[in-house]
Amino acid sequence: MPKTQRRRRREAKTDYKARLALLKSEKPRLVVRKTNRFIIAQIVDSELAQDKTLVRMTTKDLLDNGWPKEKSGSLKSLPAAYLLGFMIGKAMKNKIKEVVLDIGLQRNIKGSRIFAVLKGALDAGLNIPHNKEALPSEERINSGKDLSGLIDKIRNKL
Image (cartoon, rainbow, N blue to C red):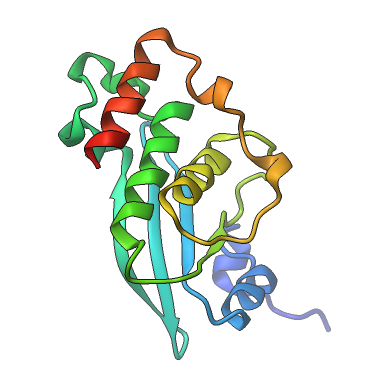
């Protein structure tokens, strides 16, 4: 008789084997998710199988920190993802020591926006185990002529 699958597994929303491995580390998780318009990053701590969100930010928050309104269509770009990771890293730098990256069911692609969030959090001072080859290069993050000056301006502001 076949085993009955859990509802969230049937809906392709949760990989329970990967989640259990993340929970066994007993460290907070940097959860990164992509939507059609934004990138969402959260730092989540688990206590007795109950998740507690410590901080949550989206790339929409960049509009409050100096991202131009006319570039609001590029809030899921690589530079926006990097700045999101930098903002969340600055917000939690003095509160937690080490986190683990949680990408969920998203594909693990070298140099992608998910790893740009990771690079931003690393540059802000968080300690996250990672492979340096997966991170995007500085040239790719600063590729836009008008966005490279904006990245430096926002980083210095935070």
